[in-house]
Length: 406
Image 1 (cartoon, one colour):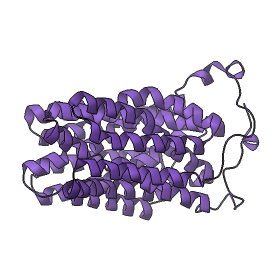
Image 2 (cartoon, one colour):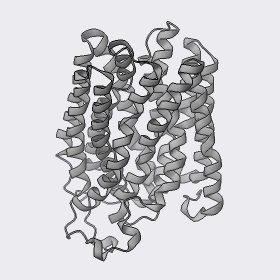
Image 3 (spheres, rainbow, N blue to C red):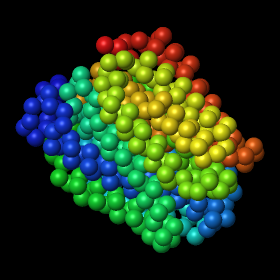
Image 4 (cartoon, rainbow, N blue to C red):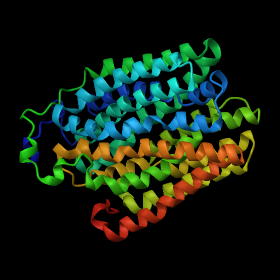
């Protein structure tokens, strides 16, 4: 295994203790446009399946989650590719290919074709996330990685706040075709900006499988499995918010879901920036526990309080309570992981995104079909609370793997 000194620097000659370097800021801007393009499909897919393809709520849930099937198989290989070819390589190509799949949504004329498009998107979209999340932690000083992840959330949640509103606005003004094309265009812009990132391809040739220990040949990184499973339960709330809340708003004739999603995204941004040092300061256990309970509470409020004010209140509780789950668990997932294994750890951890929608989407759809759309919010709240025992088990059996409170 190569030592830390043999891993090439991803910086541009600036002090390594400096966090907001030009490379970090460029990565953040690229991330904003990528997440805006990707998230623009979130309110569009349920409406497209429901209104254009005349699909059921179960089929809506499958369309939201089916991309996770291909992503689960592709993402571990993406992680290894990121360690061998560099983070910039997978960011550029993954984002460009995802742009094509997003635009191709408009060509799906049947349920089965939308499923195929979603599967294609699942195989490509993980590359951007793995590349950017790994590069953020490469660029940050080790003791400030939680803070760096929070600052990068300006891109993640800024894009995810603007994206659904962009998709919904363009769709209402010009139709689904232009809405999906706008999402693809935003992703292409992100790929173009990523070409300006520092070239981080390893200078030394990658080690061969015969040189690796048996554990290193496994595509999943063991350090990231437990934090990824905990994140998975919390992320089901995100599937409910973006996949079923727009339908709920239409059923209750409460206007548009876009402003509610915008408020949610902006509140997360405020919390992440104001509390940027919280994951490093308070540690994994405290921050994760607060976040999971907050997410469950927000989902319960949205399901119980069937009004526009109730949806805004639920989204606010969800944002304020659950803001720090992802940066806290990501920091723990790469805690002590060598540089040349970090992309594999991030790819293992980020499988939670695919599994949460792939498993959670159909369950939420079945709940909505059986007991009404509000039941999808209660199901998401239960999923978040199911992660609490797993978090406590992790803290009890592997306390050395958690970031300690400082």
